[in-house]
Each structure stands twice: as structure tokens, then as C-alpha cells.
Image: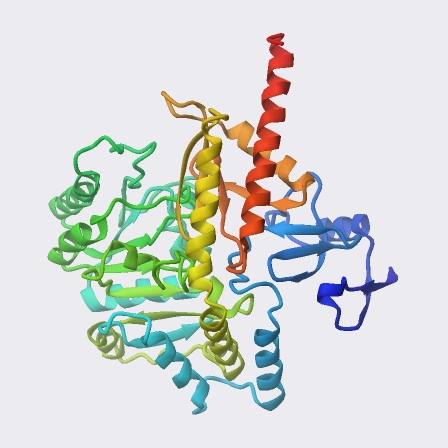
Length: 463
């Protein structure tokens, strides 16, 4: 072990940071020895060791700067000074169990209420998106007195056992589907069952949910909840056809179930035009439960569930106290308040809208030169670029997507893939992602795809 003295670059300078650090290879060897091997690193063949960050940038142990296109957790930017100040100030004053009366949790709940439909007004604060979704499952079952859940194919809602059970992305690899889980087709209008040429894809996909409900009823099963991300991320950065949520809600509520929206990936203004992803479906739509997480604390473990008074009352009526030791503690809520302040003061929703539109426009512009790019989609700074081997068949270009990710890393741009076939390049950067960043990403993708095309032509002899 050696002592390393890091001098921060000028734009980050706040003195000299001194810590005892392993060199990269020692860190990697010790991680393999001490950390479970199922906990995988980005770029596992040649991982990047990150030692500091600011804004949309990451820095390795050699001072190399990487543009971060995927850390949606660090919503207002890595190590934002307003957030770190709020955390430090509250930590020096008080941090304690949520059972003590304190103002921060009230202030924070009030601020969140102002962003939501009036019906969503009762909060439960927890520490992770997984905790929030697990609690949503409990509330839904208590309120409806039903057991079954409908989810979308390729969905991921968390790593707890209860959530693996309702996450096809996980349970298909782990031994199968529980009898109380029903999987509806992902409403993907690019490669899904009903595509952009369908006269009413929203109705068609909603009808698959209706069919699952009817099939369940024939077997004597009853629906407690429909779970969906506002814009599925692991599913491939999908944007639902307009009206889909309203139509599904009609079927689900008609069967006595509740509609749960998972905003863990998409909330807090990421979609730009709205504060919450579900609001893209229209002002008339209101879920029964909303879960939120990752961006809330800008890297601090903070999440929550919000629901209606009716659902909350049913949960209270079960006679079992609910408590969460650290959920909504004074420090967490101080951080959450600071994040909301930064979103407003730096107009980050507008930035997400404008820069996201710019990025999607530049990527769509590349489609004329690069047939590999089959589809570009998204909202705000939630963007997906799907690579295909053939635009007619829309067959996934999985290997090419992986190679593009690796080459972008060599250009100091951090991205990753998602989607059922790992052929969708996903972009969920910190909300301070700039116009210049978007231009850089598009330019580097253009250069890399051009180079890859040249390599293929040389290999085939077509030069």
C-alpha cells in the first residue's frame, strides 16, 4: 500500500487530497479476493479506477477525465457543492432515527407534494429503490387483499427476493416465474409485438394486460397491482405509446388492482418537459402508488414511496407498525431538499429538455451515414440508440454495441448497453450534461462507427 497525493485540476481545486491508496492492479486483485464475484464492474476486462468526480466528469488515478453518460444517480452532478454542504451541515448538527420528531422530513414531503398530483400525498421514506418497490408490493396487497401482480417483460424493479419475483429481467435467469406473476409484452413500438405502423399500439398493448387479467380470473386469481417503470430502462430505454397507462389503469382498477409506477430511473425532471416520467402520459393520468429513488439523494441512499390516503389507510389498518430506522432521517432529507433546490436554481429540467433534444437530433442525423443505427428514442436526458444488423429485420447488433461501448471508453466517454439483446446504447447522464458534451458524444460515435465500417470492408476485401 502506498500514499498517493492527488492534486485536483483547477476547475475542481479545493486543496490537496491525501489518502492511502492501492495501485490499480492491487485494488483489482483485492476486490476479487474480498468482494463477491457476482458484483460486476463496468468494463470488467479492463476496469476504470475512479478516484474523484465533479459535475458530469469522472477522474481516474492518473488524472484522466471521463465524460459520464450513465450516472443518473448523481442527478445534479457528482459532488455538487450545495449538496455536500447541506449534508455536512446537517451531519454536524443532528442525524437520528426517524421516530424522533424533526422538521426536515416534513419540509421535504411538502416540497415533493408540490410536484405530484393532489391525490398522491402520503409518503413513506426508505433507503433504496428496492425498498420502495418492496413496500409498494406490501401496500398494494394490503389495500386490495389480492396477491397477483402484472409486470412488463424485461422489467427490473430491484434486488430483493420479492422484487426478483416480479422482474422478468432477473427471474428468467434464476429458475422461472411464480404462479402469481403475470408478464405482459413490453410496449416497444420499434421491435415489439405491435410496432409504429399499428393503428393504435397503446390500445393493442393495453389489451394484452386485459387478457392476462381475464386468464387469471378463470384460474381463480385476483390482481393486486400492475407495476411499470415510466420509461423502461433495462428494457431498452423504451418510450410508451401515448395513452397506454390510461388504458391499462382502466383494466387494472376494474379488476380491483392498483397501478404502481416505478420512477427510480426517470424521476426528478430527467424527462425534461415534466418532473415525473408518468406525466408524459398526460395530466389526466394519476397512479395509485409512485416509487422513487436513485436521483433523490445525488448518490446518498435516499428513496421513498408516495400514495393516496385510501391506500395508506388500509396499510395502517393492518395493525402492524411500519418503521424504517434510517429512512427520512434529518441528513437524508437535508440532502434531498438541496437536490430539489439545485434542480430549480440551475434550471436543470430545461437543460435536460434542450440538451436531450440536441443529443437525439445529432444521433438521428448519424443514421444517414450509419445503417447500424436502427432507432433513436427517449425523452429529455433519457436516451436510447438501438443498433441493428439490418434495418428491415431489425435484428440486434449486440456485438457491435459492445464494441462501440469499449471504443467510447478509449475515447474517455462512459456509456453502457441495455435492452433484451444488449444492443441499445443508453444515455442517462447527470442533469448538468451540456450542449458541448452532446456534440462530443455524437462526434465520437460518428468517428468510431466510420472506423468500424472501414474495418469490416477491409476484412471482407470490399476496398
